[in-house]
Image (tube, rainbow, N blue to C red; front, side, top):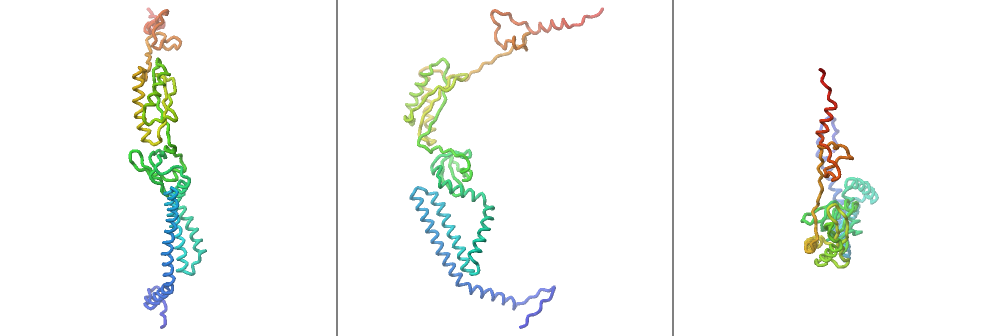
Length: 332
C-alpha cells in the first residue's frame, strides 16, 4: 500500500500508521517481557535480602543496648540496598542502559536532592552522630533550646522529649548537635542549694550548725558528699548562709527533697530564736525649707540638728531679706 503524501496545513488521520505504531510497541513489550519478569523476581529477592540484612543490624545493635541506633542504621541499610537493587533491575529491563549512566545520573540527582532537602539531610546526619556518640540516652532528663524534660525517643530527624508538665517537644537533631545541652541525669547525684538570711545580731556558727542538723534529718539528702552550710554574704538586711546538699539527679527527687528541706530549716531556726528578717530600707526625707538647702556641705538630708549646733534658718526668712536688699526705693 502506498503511503499518502502529507498535505501541509491539514490534519492527516492515517489509521494504518496508528496500528503499525501500536504493533511496534507491543512487539517491543513482548521482547522485554522475559527481562521484565527476571527483574521483578530480582526485586522481590532483593527486598527480602534487604529486610534480612536490616534486621541483623537492628538485632545486633539491640543486643548492645543501642536500640535507636539499630533502628536508624537498619532502616538506612534496608532502603539503600533496595535502591541499589532497583538500579540493577533497570539495567536488566533496558540492556542499553549501562551502570555507568545510572551512576552518573544518580550523582547529578544526588546533588539536586541534597540542595532541595538540605535541612532534612542535616538533621538526619546529626541524628546519626548523636546516636553514635551518645551524649545522652533514652530516659535522661535534658535541657535544650529552653526546653527541659525526659528523652523519649531519638529519631533520625528529631529528638522527642516529654516535659515535666506532660507536654511533648520535638527538637531537630541539628539544633541539639550544634547547641549546648544540659544533661541533668548524666551522673547519679546532683547538688541543690538554697540561701537563708539571718539577723546580724544572731550567731552565724550556731545557725550553720542548726541548718546542718536540719539537712541531716531529711530523707533523700545524701551523706556522701556531706551537706554544707556556708556563710555566703553580708547583705543589706541579713547575713546570707548558703545550704548545699546532694540528692539523686532526677527532678522528682530534687523537687521533693527541697520541699522537705525548707520547712525543716525554718523550724530549727525558729526553735532556736534565730531571726530571719524581712528586707528593710531607710527612707530620708529632705527638708527643703531651710536656707542651707542646695548646699551639699550644709544641707541636713533629713538628719536631726546636732545638739551643739544651731538650726538653719527657714528659707522664707532668707528670701524675705533678699527681697528687702534688692528692693528699689520709691522716689518722692
